[in-house]
Length: 125
Image (cartoon, rainbow, N blue to C red; front, side):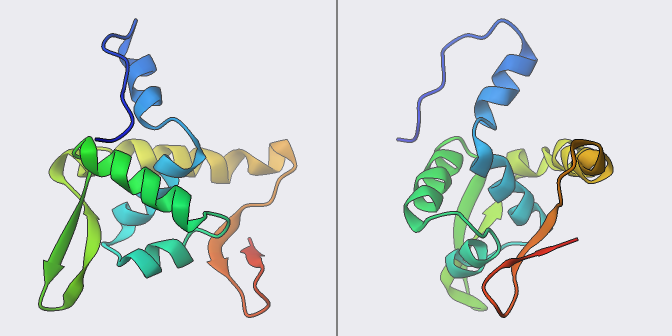
């Protein structure tokens, strides 16, 4: 079983933020929202995320029914993808990403594309 959520929340926003709590869950969901990915592809698409943390977060997201691991002829070792419940987060994830892109300059930060360049560093936009 994955990380336990509280049994009650004061409002829906508090609950939603608890599900997305932490830096990596929303990023994992966002990457899987783009397309299903094998573990290694998912890991490579999120620089700075350790194998241990990715495994833990995937376990949480799968136990909550947001992500599933599927095998297919094209992916015999399997790939991770959003469930129907996870796909319902599409609008929210896109809105969060868009807000970050539009407001990063006001916070004096650069937004990377999440992909490492040949030198092993993240590419900045």
